Length: 388
Ligand SMILES: *Cc1c(COP(=O)(O)O)cnc(C)c1O
Image 1 (cartoon, helix red, strand yellow):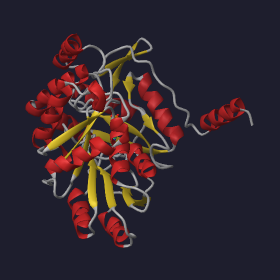
Image 2 (cartoon, rainbow, N blue to C red):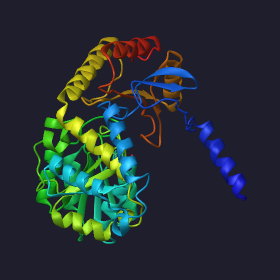
Image 3 (cartoon, rainbow, N blue to C red):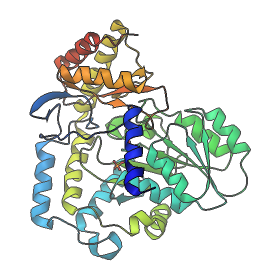
């Protein structure tokens, strides 16, 4: 088969199954509204939970950072790319998560690959929630450890699998808040199972940090779990913090080991120092402006109340990720298109991002939204005939 024939076959199969993906070109900064194809749409599609991605103070910190530090870091962290703003941000992230050290990565995807593959090898076992983020599943595969997937949010199923595990190191990996479902992992039960079976627990809190817990300290803080219970905490900076990059926080030894052994840390260019400066500004706002979390929670409650009155098929989520379960990819696409006609952007999430038969709308809320905008969304969902 020629390459061309292979590619065309693959693309045709995806079109046929309503799984073809297209990019939209946005002509506006991130915010409650977005301009696409010259059209202004209400944006319920981003992970900018606190409304910081377009915040003028954060943008100014980026601009000032670029004036002072230039556009690029010029090298990897272990060469000459580790600049003072990166170092300061790491110290601030460590303090924020109440851990001795933090280590910056260029993206969350790379952080997950780097952490899991550095901690495990052939002969070890990684246990993953079935609905973990793709980067965590890929990390498990890259590590060459045995990959065991346990039933979603099911600590009893995890425990059964831990009890049956062969020798070697055991790492249990979970999203803190599940990215496509919005529910929170049963962290205390997972931590207890890990303690009983001599396993290490790693939490990817991409959607919890900034949003949950006092001061936005995330799902571990909300569950009152410390570093003994969860030795490896990973977070991203492109969601609630509104910028770009990721980090891991933990013990002195964990961070020093990852600096030596995490290949996606060692063999990549450090993110620009200006981005680190922007993130420092965003972290300050996220930590101190509780009104953002309060407003966000009130908008989510308003949406859930209205959606329940309309009989919409909501899922069991209390977080700003509010999926509406539709089933088939075709139906999800059709409703998403209908909403777009009404001036509202809500993405259809289809397999393989979610299991077959569970295609959905993934509605996300931001502190940048208004109550009137939430009401407009509810009216459009009603109009689109989404009620169960
Ligand atoms: C977004 C996300 C990532 C990847 O982070 P990036 O910085 O965007 O690469 C990892 N894990 C989860 C749960 C995520 O939602």
